[in-house]
Length: 634
Image (cartoon, rainbow, N blue to C red; front, side):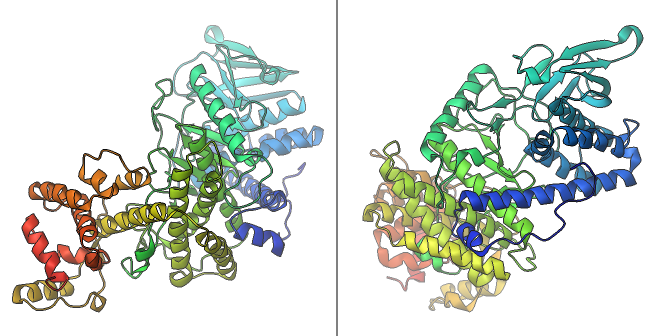
């Protein structure tokens, strides 16, 4: 690492047996270790590209120095102590900054003045010198009087708000920071390597006790998007995260290899997503804009095998330009979370309610990290056009094939996680069985959609067949019939409402339906026409999913009665809602589900409920007449 030449120039070829391990949804330490090698090679290639770009744009550093000067700080440190420099350059802190800088230089990201972002390279060089025990004299950018030292902490020097510079003099373990001039000059001294307790001028980075996993509330590039200010956790909140991490680590163990099992030491960093989550702590400031994740949601069950609209059947999460894998609104106890392919093993997670919820999120996000590394080796989809047309059991809106691929891999892990919890004495076995039953149907449907609808590369086909084999074996495992039935009902609920919110009959089909209804003729077969997507999909969540997981003993609402197995009462209550709001898609989907529950022979309309909207029923009575007509007047 002593030169700027790109290392590991040769192609990395993953051994067949390691690929098959990862294709099953799991991965041994050897398989994950290979992915880490992939990420190291990519990181060094990106570093070389970034330094070249900075050479081409010397104004980017705005007088702080040249890219060569900054690189020499790192290269000399790598000569003195290569393992410390390697750990720094492979840290998620540096990975996220590097990717952000490349996007800025390519014009696809924003942020503070460019010299502030680019000048962070000198802060990285300073950390490298600290790790190697070398001296340094360098000018560094500061933000609101703060200097972020990636992996170490945050140094503060009194000064005005906004962006400025400070002179850093590193002598032994002492870092002297000076800002201002003349009588206004201020100098502070901190010792970043001493593990000093926080004080007015120094806040050390947090790690979870007994691990090397960061709990990062300081680094400006932790948000996975544009830089954000530090938001140090209060003492009680930090202790809360430590307790939940300890609980999650105990659940997950340390030697597991199968899908849904995670060796906790492979998680590099957890970033608390501030201000979001159950009982969000007031000690943490409001959050920033980053991608979202999912919990278990509602699944597409047995009958979701029918056409899901626009010629597709399944859906999942998608990524953004920042490489964030994003997913749906979660179940009640699931935190929001996100992962970037720029930093293997790093994840952003909103405040979980307990260690179980944190463990599920960690499994989910590490699946994204593994898939992201595989995608850095070779494409899995062939010329995906990004069209958002697929039914997404975990999402309120249609998604592209790239999202389905992310969902298939992530939720294979989630499915395995809940499978293990069924035998875990610390978890509710019935709730775990529900989530397992729901997720295995959900994930297998997404895999089938990709295999039948997406344009896959050879590795992509092999990966999906591996995931299919895992899910097929799980589908053969017994689950109590009443729990499996609730999972199917939750799947049906989401799918029906999704269609009512996202699909409409085309003009030709709508005209044919209204004419036939007016003339008393039989409805035209649904297979004659294909639905069309609405122009502006609505953001929504299905509250019935949680109710199906834990049906209330004393139901009071229409949703609760439906989930508790009382469709007759539910239908009446939904009708009351529709009398005042006839176009409410949640109440309409609930009425259709309840109607099918009262008369199971009337489930046919659930496959394409948007056909009912073509008749625009304005009252519950008109709704019932229209539904009767679709079922032949029975």
